[in-house]
Length: 505
Image 1 (cartoon, helix red, strand yellow):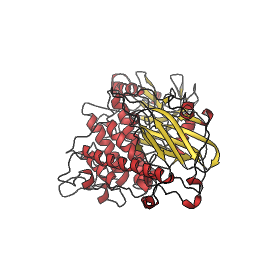
Image 2 (image 1 turned 60 degrees about the vertical axis):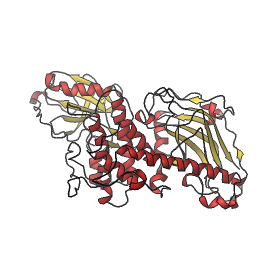
Image 3 (image 1 turned 135 degrees about the horizontal axis):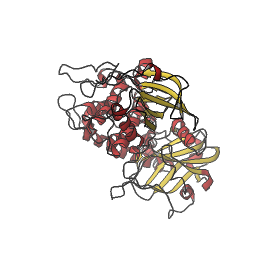
């Protein structure tokens, strides 16, 4: 794993370490970081080592630079700035030390591969996986921008994919030419690269070791669908518009929010099954090269999809409750299967008793400060609620989302799930899994990675319901997964879940 890949052709040339000072396996830096293996050198000569923090007994990446002092000031300044932003999609920075003869930065060790290495081994990725990676990068960039800083070094070599599936952005290095818009365009370039294997080097800063985009007669990068089949219309337009220099890029938090709706990690059905609304050019108000309207109009298409998804959910629940038989051809909610009349059980559902011990909060990227009072969501009273903290940025700009996990006590058939919220505006999807690995950070990350979708994300109007369960299947672990919180009217965001009801035979 190259913890720091080749950089973008920096002009600086670093001096080699003096022979007597050259690092060796077993060297102990700052009486704490033991060098275990030399990994690589980047394009400007920084040495990258795998090390061990001998105090905390954890692997770390050590980036060494010779000499230290004034010539290392930029590297150390960038490391200090990066250490102030804590986010699950950013590589953690632990330490930065200047010893005059050398300087080094200690950061999180990521066991895996870079995006460049991944595509070199596998070729272009499927749309679902490409979207998940772009969403993670967008969330990381939004978190950096929320602090007033810029990243400035987003390319396939600094996007790292851990073996557990986690995607992290590394090696922030903004300079005087970096802008927030450049960072956002690079998010689009990451999506474009993941889909095509080509990097739009004329639209964003060049990336080492990857081919430029294929270009049309006017010199524009062609859309991803012109390079490969199977890219959904909406994703094709999204990637093409983000890298198009004729459009002003939107803020990173808005891009992260849009990608949250596309993200296959939260909405597999959205990408893997035909969408009820095709995101064609006319639906989005977008036109192909030479005359597309501004990128922001994509939000209209997304809003239309969410409205139809909410309407579909309502119709499905009405059918289960004994709605008009002639309407059954419209199917179940959000594209799910319609209940089978022969199953019988779905036609006579009853609330499944739930205690406070059967629900918990899943917060894989948070500070663990919002885990209490989950029992209020199943106490039978709408006057009580579990509440998030108040956020000053959209949720996915801070972390990948939050969830409420429900343990039904054992495998059983389920007819419907219903949730009541204090206010409208939450984006919620329903997932299910085979086990609850426990309430710690690692357990929450496993839940996020392993639980599969029953619905795509929809924006609620105060209540939410799903009734498209397979009547012949059994479920034990369900999770409501939130990727957006309601706006509170004062520039912030906060969610209050009053009651969750699960029904079954």
